[in-house]
Length: 290
Image (cartoon, rainbow, N blue to C red; front, side, top):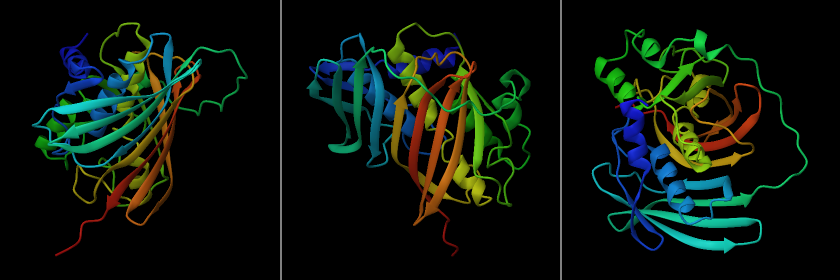
């Protein structure tokens, strides 16, 4: 296991300070606020700590309410909304400086047999044939060295490989609003299913709005031609998967309007199983010229 991955796992291992109350801390991000994937993953950890081990996360719905302060701890308050025969529901509110910054509802279910079908896996190249994240980032001379290092530090726990140039690599001309990345953690994880769901939640916020930027030829936050932030985030976990094995994140944007952009995605295992569906809306604004 890489040192960066162990550091991330330590970050997600929340401190229990009271019944159904947990405390977490933050790490560096590409933007000067708490990374949305981090707070979503920590909130899911807090919810999962209050659920029996035989019930696995099958969905989450979250709202980003305020920018998080990376220099202050985050307190996660868990409400036990429902404990049914098959489903368990939890609500989590993340608080900083006395105000909620994030809210999450998560549902957990015992295993059941049932109807089974899925959308086919899209075509994508073998991840081992693609440049690593570091190789691709360092190949763009227009990116400041400081920006490259911030990206690499923020993503050091994950092997994330773009199939095509990301928005910040090739911008200025609109492209098809479709983006693919392969990802896996930089090291093996324990067999705990919640841990793999939490790590996928963490990564899911890294690139989902890229397709919005592609549609308008924008490079994004790395080059400063848009400003924005996540507004809400939803995930459905369909089938078991491992976050330490290759996952294909196939992303597209059907709409952008009113200063907001929508991203939709499916995550498949390398052998073609549909593991996760994801939808996110974010603020995407063009900076005003002075």
